[in-house]
Amino acid sequence: MGAAEDAEVIVVGGGHNGMICAAYLARAGIDTLVLEARGQVGGCASTVSDLGARFNICNCDHTLIRAMPIVDELELGAHGLRYLEADAGSLNLYHDGAAPWFFFPEVDRLLDSLGASFPDQVDGYRRYLDDAMPVAELVLDMARSRPGAVPMAATAVRGDGGPARRAEGARRLLDWSRRSLDDVLGQYFEDWHLTMPLVTSGPTVWGAHPALPGTGLAALGYASRHLVTTGRPEGGSGALTDATRASFEAAGGRVRCDARVDRLLLRDGRVAGVRLDDGTELVSPVVVAACDPQRVLVDWIDEPPQVARRLIDRWRSQPTHDGYESKIDAVIDGVPRYRDHDRLAERHPDVELLGPTAFISPSPEDLAEAHALRPDGLVAARPSILANVPSVLDPTLVTADGHHVLSVEVLFTPYDHPGGWADSDEPARWLDVWAGFMEPGARDRIVSWRAMTPDRYEREFSMHRGHTPSYAGSPMAALLGRRRELTRYRTPIEGLYLSGAGTFPGAGIFGAAGRNAAGVVERDLTGRIGRRLRSLRRLSPRRTVRAPS
Image (cartoon, rainbow, N blue to C red; front, side, top):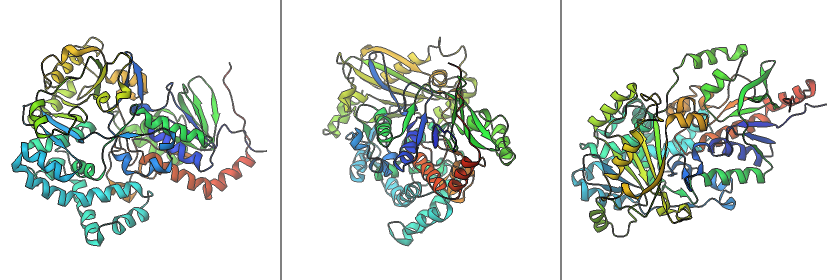
């Protein structure tokens, strides 16, 4: 008699990667259960209700996931997902008052916008695109391909553009992945006003300095957005995970919310299931942890099997990172206008100026100050900011009483802030900084607001010390299979797989890690490992153990 299992596969973590992984598995006919610690799925891709409004937990812009086949393969459109696109990809603003410029996905429109503000950088941008586009195309193709040296190497040489273009892209990919962003961009731009938007959306979001070797691939930020248009799910960022859940459940998958996992169950060195913090044990021979890999490997395993001890010792020796991002969510009365509204409207009469996200970038000197203050828990006077009014592009987010919603994301805002965040004056100051980029009276339009600081992310989203894990390796590391648990999704513990933003390729709302991990699990369950698991089930029956009610 076989074991009484709660599921053939348990996926821990209902963020977008966990839900995507689970949906692929369920649609492949695999009995899959998703466990989510919160009361709803979505993780940092969620849209939540508060202050009488709907707010996105993180920035609402989705780009890289739109380069993947996920939306079509999971039929997310049929389950309610619809993307809206602003007239421009982003608006670049600067604390020093330099001329703003729009990023447009159409190259000609971008060059016109850039030429009006920084005409001496247009030729550099053209040279940048000549070099960066083959690399960006290659990186996106590698993210779409099955993880492994053979399929990824085949992608590197067989894609569109011809052998010479692919070879040049591969050579430059290897070169840039080793260099710093400052070094790479210095080949093309003499003016920091061109480089700092990529620093703001790249290394600063990662918590790294742009002079650090290994940050060079952030230079693909502009090129990739020419290849893939940024969009926002109608109804908020959480519409993505809501549609994914619907696709998953339509295929027979099950979701259990308010279910916090605190231990991995092992039997004879293999996965046997998980234990929840209320003592409930759920039985499954396969667990996919779509959450922080350090917490899984350090906190969830009491007695690691011999085969995994070296790996777990390595993870235990790694430093624990603190969160450094905060976000202001506000309800505003009416629509504010940029201080540069008239100049922007004259140049771009067909653009809704508040449609795209504004990247508010500091100077390199201001960024250096931010890095210097961060260890002491202090926030720079002129921080890196991502701001938008999502309800302008998406009227479904307008409140019942006709108010708009404002999002102001601020970096760096350390976890260990002197005196704690509850009594800090900092969040109110960030609103003043934002208002300084708007016409007078913008600050007075704010009806109510809340601050999502690192301590709140820890309490409400199970993010250890408010930190969002992110894969730090390069596509070349993935090609070579370095850190196999992060790039191949398998661990040495039979039946334990990793997914989520901490695994390749990470990078915000991407979903490739969830899709890739599902492919690995499905192949294993239908191959040699699956035959072994079925044999063990026949030999070693086990019943579900429930906590006393």
